[in-house]
Length: 315
Image (cartoon, rainbow, N blue to C red; front, side):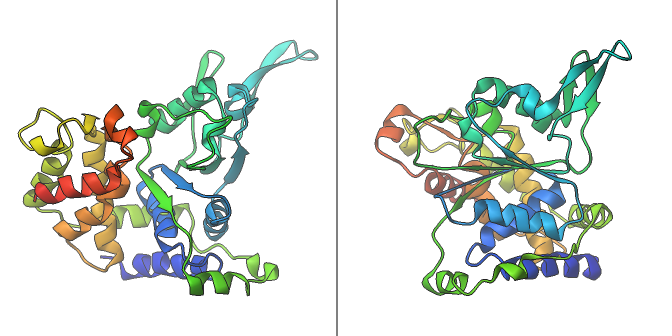
């Protein structure tokens, strides 16, 4: 285990916490996305520091950052780019959109229609985009950090299940504690200038170090059992939860549980994964992938709590 790499990751979180109070889980999720090269959906009420957290983390990382404000009139070409005709040269040239960045903040992602979501889907899934008849690779690392408001539904478009599945995890942001909110009042804007701590080389080293964390076959069995426990019709699915779930989590959930459990172990200074590391990321990884039934939606069932209970039953 590289103590130097771990020290840098812990340092970037320490620096970020000086700017963003009371949102430690969100900051760690953003760092996990950068190290594991996954995408994160951040859901929370307005004013909780979602956009600011992404901005602060981007300043602490020496990576190309772009912010895209998603609006109902946004077009796919505004996001990925388009072909433009050069009359002087009598030829078409490619104008690249803001998606060609290493960190992309998709602010209020659910405010744009399906055609924009489809354009983003290819980028998130394949790390490439098609402009005209040519396919262009996106830079490495490529991470989408999206935000959305959980209660304001007017003028919004629900994200399709296929796109939700592309997000490594969904983080739900709560109100800060009393002391954290008091500290926010003392924050001075002149302290917002941050020096980069990590670069692409550091993140590559961190990714290699996380992948080197040992996970026993028993841990892999636990992960697969947890995911199978969310799927109706499997032996691991509890009969008492019949009628709550329409469809369970995909194999992508198993992959991200495995990777994020290693990340959690690494951040604790461990060189092996425990079941507790897996359980700690279950709500964020499985909560948005399990599709609730119509009855469960009407009863306002907390799916994050349900998947945690499912995971515990699989141990």
